[in-house]
Length: 435
Ligand code: GDP
Ligand code: IMO
Ligand code: MG
Image (cartoon, rainbow, N blue to C red):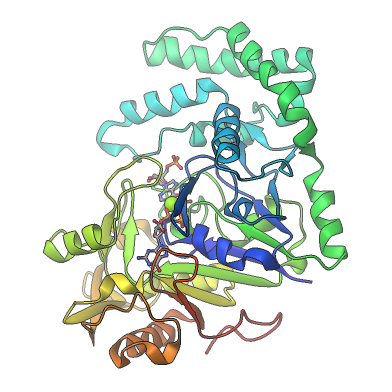
C-alpha cells in the first residue's frame, strides 16, 4: 500500500538521507525522482559514514531495490564511480534500475554551468557546478540526451550535434571559449552503454506494479521546497521540482497513489549558495550553529549559511507539499542556548506577513518577527524517548508543531541511524496533517 515521499522542507541538507535510511527494512523500493549529483546525503551507519550523491540512500539497506527515475539528470561517470565506491565497501548495488527516459548530463553542460555562473558575476546563483541547470534547460528546450539514446549511435550523434550547434555558438561567440567537438562527446557516452544496459528499465511500470503488489516505495527528493524551480526563491533555486508533485511527474506514478508526504526540516535553518534567507545570522550564534552542526556542504564543502527556524517557510512547505508528517532533525545542536528564537512572521515595509510573500522583492526585504523559546543545557543525543527529553526541548518541538502547520512525527537527536525519537508512526493515508 504505502508510497511515501521524503522531501526537504527548507533549503536542502535537512537530513533527508538519514530519514530515508530510517524507513529501512520496511522499504522495498527507494526512488530518486529529481535532481542529480548536486545532492549530497550523508548517512551514518555504526562507524561507517556514507556520502551519497546520485544513488538514493535506501541503497544502504540490504534487499531494497534502488531506482533512478525519469525526473533525474544522470552524470554517468559519477554514477559508475559511486557504484564502484559503494561496492568496494560491501554495499550491493546490483539491483539498481535506471529509467530509459532519464536525461544524461553530457560534459558540455558542466562547461555551460561554469561559464554561465562566471558570466553572471555578482548575479550568480552559486550552483554546485554539476551541469544541472543546463541539462534541465536542454530537457525543456527539447535538445536533451536521454539514457535510451545511448543505445542508438546514429540518433545519439544527431542529438549531440544538434545540441552543440547552439552550445558552440554561445561558447565561441559570447563566452570566448573553444568549440566542443561532437565526436569526443558521442564516444564518451557510447562507452557507458554496455555497462548501463542491464540496469535500464521502464521504471514507471516497475514501480506501479510494485505498488499493485502492496510493496512499499519510498520517493527520496534531492534539494528542497525553497529550491524548487516553481515554488522556491526563484531565480535562486535548482532547476527541478523538488516538491511533492515532482515525485509524481518524476516517476510516472499518479498523484492519487502517493499516500504520505514526509517533510524534513532542521530545528534551525541552513542554506548553501546565493539568494534570500530572512533568518540568516552573521554573528557568533550563526557560527555556533555552523560549527556545532558541522554545517559544511556534503557535495562542495562550502560553509552553509545558518539561521533560526523559520515557521513561515515551514507553513509554506506544509501547504505546497500537502505534508502529512514533519521530521525535525538536529535538535541536539541547539543544546546549550539560553533561548531559541523562532521566526513566526515577517515584516515587510511595516506590514506583517503571516504567509510567504508572493512577491520576490518583498521576500528579499522580509524582516523576521521572532518568538523566543526557553533553551536547555542537557546533552540530548542519547535520548530515545519523548519523556527523556528535557521539558524545554519538548516545549520547543510542541511550539514548532503549533506554528508549522503539520504534526511532528520524528525528532532527530544525532547523525546515527538510531538517534531519533519517534513520537507518532507516520500518518495513515487520509489522516489530517494538522495536530
Ligand atoms: P540531506 O541532503 O537532506 O540528506 O542532508 P545532508 O546529509 O546534506 O546534511 C544533513 C547532515 O546532518 C548529515 O551530516 C547528517 O549526518 C546529519 N544529521 C541528520 N540528522 C541529524 C540529527 O538529528 N542530529 C545531528 N547532529 N546530525 C544529523
Ligand atoms: P541536498 O539534496 C543544498 C543549491 C546550490 C545553489 C542552487 C542551484 O543535499 O539537499 P544547482 O547546482 O542545483 O543548479 O544549484 O541550489 N543546491 C543545494 N543546496 N542542498 C542540496 O542538495 C542542493 N542542491 C543544489 O547550492 O544554491
Ligand atoms: Mg545534502
